Amino acid sequence: MKSFYAQNSKIHPNMADLIKLLKKRYFIAALTNTIAMHESHSRKRGLFKSFHKVFLSNRIHLVKKYFMGSENDSEEIYIYVCRRFGVHSEECIFIDDMKKI
Image (cartoon, rainbow, N blue to C red; front, side, top):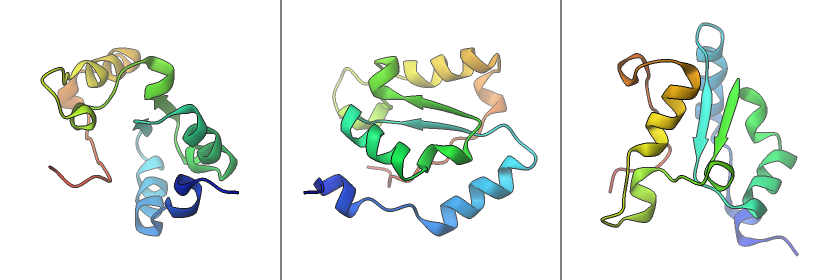
C-alpha cells in the first residue's frame, strides 16, 4: 500500500522545466524539509536528479523556517547551504513550492 505522500505528491511540470532551464547557466540545489520515507520515494521517482546538489532536512538536521511555525524558527538552514557553496546569501535566489503563510 502506498503512503499518502506517495499517492498525493507530484512533480509540477512547470517547476521541472524551470529547473532544467536554470541548470544550463547556474548551479542549482534543492533544499527540502523531508523525512526518510519521503526521501526514499522522492529518490525512486528521480526527483533529485535535476539538481547539482541536494540538501535534505532529515540528513542535515535543520528545517526551513516556515516548516516548524514556532518561535524556534531559524534561518540557520539557509546559512548552512550558502556556507557549503562558499557564497553569500545575496548571491542566491530561493524559489519555493510553498505559499507564504
